Image 1 (cartoon, rainbow, N blue to C red):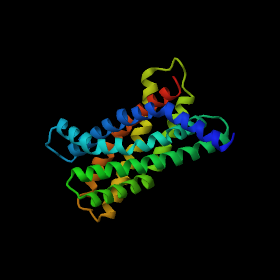
Image 2: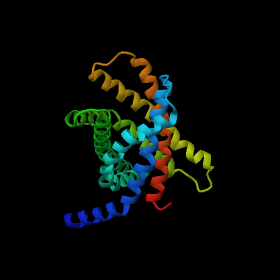
Image 3: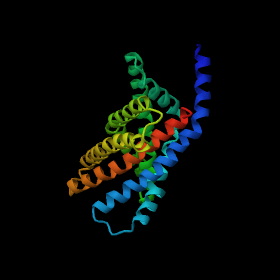
Image 4: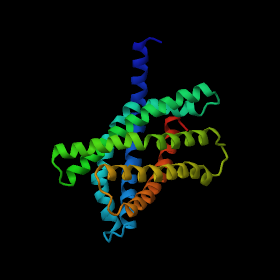
Length: 238
């Protein structure tokens, strides 16, 4: 296939998957932001009502994620293709699928982190340039720290989907992507916060903060795994 035809084919795939990619952002990122913030702050002893915390998170962190996730529309066809190839029994296809997952996940996570960090910074009172710098630091941290866990989680979900039986118990069907998301979400969230704290030389009370981040990352990751599994089903027409 010529380069021109490849570009046209990819553009068609991008348009076809755009609504599903948008659903992935709205159904996944907004609730995840709320869950993360509520669990994190409650673990650290916050007396603020959970609904108030959730509302603030959706207006700040969640909105920033959705804005940044527009990159997902561009990379989602690659991601879906990578997930499909990871389900193959051929080692060569699995390697190609892994490469697609690495590239699309890095781009998606990095741009989403910049959007989230910038919007959250502005809503926190930062000046425009300072908010952007904060967003860029978060985007860099996301690309470095969350890439491997995100790819591992995606690979586990792809594998479980390929082995799924039509009459599989619905609870078991939901458990696998939820557990994969929870484990990787907990590890990556704690690691990301730890690295950012060290970069900003903010180590006071780090242990308690890491506990909160790990628990909130697990809760949000479980939700994210369920949403991703459902979205992939939509993309595959299942």
